[in-house]
Structures are given as structure tokens and as C-alpha cells.
Length: 137
Image 1 (cartoon, rainbow, N blue to C red):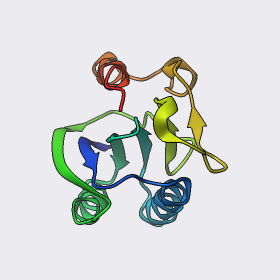
Image 2 (image 1 turned 60 degrees about the horizontal axis):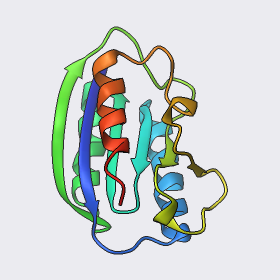
Image 3 (image 1 turned 135 degrees about the vertical axis):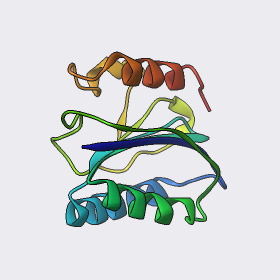
């Protein structure tokens, strides 16, 4: 199991429809590739963790880096893991800021990140998500 995490900055203000498009595209592409993960958005920045077969994760990440909806993409880490942390869905999308605006169906707004991160998440990933949660857009 291969895992990759990155952060990026939203290029423009993203509407609820834009966020829905991001989620639907991620679910569709990840499902085909056998990739799962989570995407957090704080109104300005994204944090995404992808996991699955290395070749597929890297292929999806290359496409993500070319997406014009964000810029300043920075890889946080690449690592191997014993098992998936986000196995329940090809992609979940959560917001950690009330400044995001109207939310589409399937998008969660929560300041309690413990509600949407798996209890089995390794401590270094949990710490990264908690740190991101303090960066309110």
C-alpha cells in the first residue's frame, strides 16, 4: 500500500458547485484506479491523502498537480503502509472552516475533525490533519 499527501492553495474562490465537481471527479477517478483517501478544505487550502497502488496514486497525483483550481502544490510525504487508512470510500471531502459558504450534498463541515478521521489512523497522519485544522482559511 502506497500513500501520498500534499497541500495546495485554492486558485480562486471555489463555489459549492466547484467543490461538488472536485468530489465527484475524485470519486470517479479513484474508484477506477483502486485509490482511496480524504480531502480537507479550509476555505483556502487543501490537504489530501491518497492511498493505493503506487503507479495509480502517482498517476492521479500528476493529474491533480495540473488542475487549474489550485496552485502551490507541495508534496508532504510519500510512504508505504501496511494497510489502507481510508478504505470506506474512494474519496471523502470535509471542510474545516465556516467561511466555505453553502455546502453541496455529501460535503461535511465540522470543526471536530475526530468525526471524520478513522480511529486507526497512524499518529503522524493524525497529527498532520490536526495541524491542518488550525490553518483556517
